[in-house]
Image (cartoon, rainbow, N blue to C red; front, side, top):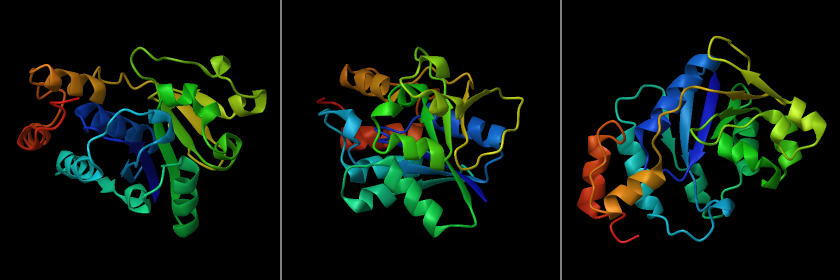
Length: 215
């Protein structure tokens, strides 16, 4: 099988995440997408996160009835900072019959040179980077050595590229203009995010547990 791993804090999960996973699945013919709920990522700084319990629960709720989308708590159960190199090594080593790609936004692509074992990530594994509204980048702009830049191919929705070791891609899927940061800010200011932004079931969970009201 061809499996995508969509990493994130999912604080909270929103419909933009699902749109992204659905679009990437179509372009790259993926059989499944794992929504990998991360522990505190090293690059997230000191911002307070909702507990791992709540973030995983919201991810489960947000993926109800979405075939092929599965929440994963593998990184949470490690109780350590979330490093993508560890995650990809684990899954590609354990499930050798499957092909994996890691899905991330263009903001992550801009910072990929700061990630742990960046060179190994881009030469041994496969990534799909998706252009985010307001953070559109091109390979030429990246702070990477020339050979690593050439490992990243720009593709469009009409193409059907094949994921594989050392093959990474940058694509534009017309991502939805929604973010977890925006949703948290709206809730903190007393506004109600619309059903076009976040699942009503996730929003109900947030309200029940009074998440994001204080920070």
